[in-house]
Length: 95
Image (cartoon, rainbow, N blue to C red; front, side, top):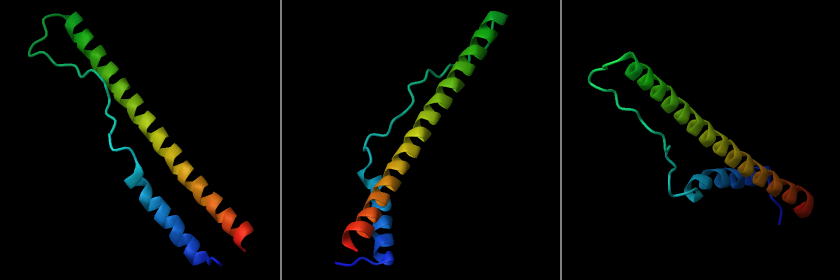
């Protein structure tokens, strides 16, 4: 059975399109503490404490986003590697 370049591209596209369907059904969410701003600050310590909590929240969200972006890059690379494996198989074993 011979495969043409077009059929290889179609198979590759089908694999890439199907990955979102096969991905985890549970969407991760950050477990970061979101600070509550008081109606009124009664001391500089409260202001400083709130500002530190805001910075901690921002750092937690940033870390979560980076982890998710890294996971997405890893999944994309795995998909690309699988397509490369298929193409090598077709080129060397079926032709």
